[in-house]
Image (cartoon, rainbow, N blue to C red; front, side, top):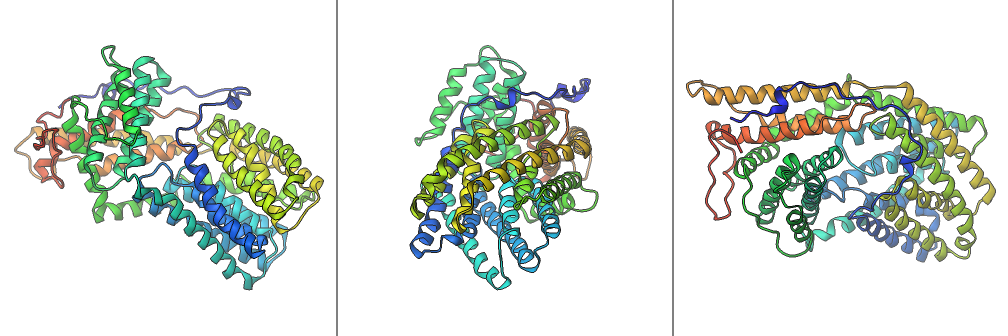
Length: 572
């Protein structure tokens, strides 16, 4: 079997990031290639309940329907089968957090208790979203809704009806986000593979650390998307072959590779026509056979039980997520109590500001602090300018909210601060549905909450660290390398009896450890190249050893339709 140089080479210690930048976090990026999908989805999901309540003359209930409508922001990078399950979970989680907040608000008016419950909900939502790796926008939307509901007037008898509004709007959001599957079933997979091909083309055209890391991340995301898509179809088989090409180009970047060909494949893959059928790349049969084995391991009931056990461990005592939850709890509580002590009537804005800051490392947390603060302050000015227009009538208020919902998602992929410029007036206009408020009071409270929330949130991130996540990645890499070595040795020794293959769960565990570490505050960069090399070598080892164990799935077909045998040595 082929050796992976990265497994045996010395491992230099990754450098720590030092310094806190000021200008770089505010630079604008290229917009996401799918920015319009969440933007249009949230507008469509919000327009139906908004206009219905407008016709009924009950715009005071918009806060409860908006909780369900905002679920349309989730899952746009997932295959439709996974997206349907994920969105259903998001809607139920939104309803659960809202229920806890509404019941608390109906039982007590103590600001101290409400802030404590808000911080506890924010910490729970942060830990849960990190455990299941929900993706953007993460727990911030859940925290925004539950925190706002804590400080809204409420009677216990109203709670069931308000939750029913949330679930109804959530059902509309689910239909909006899953409905496109009827038109283009493999759309998310095609976009993920196109991104991997484009990143590989950039890597070939401009070799360097930045393009190498980008290509590694894009290929990794494409494999994850294909693994989550369910049973392979002819289109998904072709997409898998394209990812093998992207993976080979991103890993080697040989001068003889053609970036224009990769970009042409990416354009055809992203379009609505047939998926390109490239010639087999070296190692294609081995790679796809290993992917099939891993997909089978994820599909069987034992794989589902293992996933549930992993999730329970990630939330149990000793979990690597506990420091993150503690950081969120302390930061949000500190922000809320500071604002309450200063007489601010809506400390939930400070709670949400603090909860939104926590990113993968100190530098990114600082970046988000700058972005959130600047965006909110500019957004307050936008709100002050648009407020007279919104007060010309109920329809104008609804249209303003829909416009800022669209603008927020359209702009946030350029930079978080730019999206916050639209999010802030939208959040302030929601208060207008329940009745008008003095503009000066709203502006002053929001400015104070933003500053105090950002200070408290960053202080908590600086004081509470979590270094165990990076160590878990190293242990997972070592365990995967050892398991692969054992499997290779066992395969070479034909006389050996007993299990001699690489357990696909090792690769699943490795990927999970990397994903969780990417969400922790830790200043060392993740070893993305080692992770990609370990997964690729693991797939090839699976290909060579799975037949001796009795393969759980058939070998992949070649372009001619014949079954491709697993390579005897696992080499490309």
